[in-house]
Image 1 (spheres, rainbow, N blue to C red):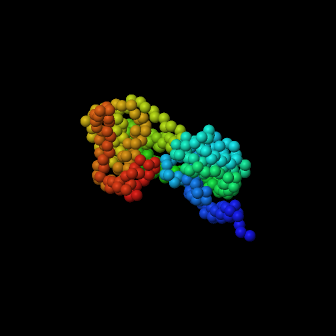
Image 2: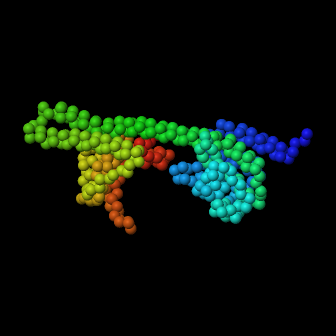
Length: 370
C-alpha cells in the first residue's frame, strides 16, 4: 500500500523532530539552542520566520531568545502576553492559528509592520508551567491545518524542557562565576590588606625602636620634643591603619550594592600633602613637596584623599631606587568649567608596563612587574 500525502507529511515531521532532538542534544547555551531550533523549524514549515521566546515573569513579557527572519527585518522587541501569535498562545495555554494576520485584532505591531500574512503560535510548557512560546510566520497567505498545529505542539513539547535546562545551566554558571569572583575578590582584599598594613606597621615598629633605643641617651630638654615627634609618627601610622580598615568597610558596602558615602569637608590640600611628606621624611625617605601655593582649600573627603596619597607615596618609595627622590607637586589649573587642583607624585621607579595601564583603576590590581 502506497503511503498517503498525510502519512508522508507525518513521516517528514517525525524525521524533522528527530533531527532537532539530535541537534540540540548537549547544547546548554540558550541562544545557540534557540538558533538551532528556529532554523530547523523554519525549514520544517517552510516559513518566512520563526521566533522562540521565554517568559519573563518579573516583567510580564515574552523575550525573544532567537528570532529568524528571511527578510532580515529589525530586531524583534519583547512581547506582552496576549499580543501576536506567541503572546496569545502563552495567554491561552493552547495553539493559535491565524490565516489573516493583518486583520487579526491581536496582531503585534512589529510583525504587522514587517508584512506578516499568517502566523501560528504554541506555548512552551514545563510541568504545566508556561515558560515561553514559539511562533511561525509567513509573508504570503497561508492556511494552517490541525496537523500543522499538532506538529508545532510536538516540537514545543520537545524543546521546552531542553530550553529550560539550558536556562538553568546558564543561571548556575552565572552563580558559579559570581561565587568565584567573590572568592577572588576576597583573596585580593586579603593580599591588598597585607600589603597595605605592612607600611604602617613598619613605621610603628621603627618609631617604637627609636624611642626604646634613644630614650636613655636623650637630654631632658630634647627628650620631650623627640618623644613628641616619634609619638606623632606612631599616631599617624595607626591612623593609616584605621583608614585601611575603613577602606575594607567601603569595599564590603560596594559589593553589597550600597552607595559610597563621601565625607566632604573644607580641606587644605597643601597641608594634607605636607603632613604626608613629613611622615615619610621622618621615616628616612627622600620625599619633597613642590608647590607655589601656601594653601589650597576645597571640599574633599580628607580621609580618603589622604589614603590615595599614602598609597601613591608608598608605591613610589617602594619601587624607586634607594637614593632617588620622590616629588609631590600641587598645582592649580583654570578651565572653562572652573578651577582644578592637580596633585602629582613623580618618582624614578621602573614605571607601569604599557599593557598594564588599562587596569590601573581596577580594584586591587597589581602590576606584572611588582
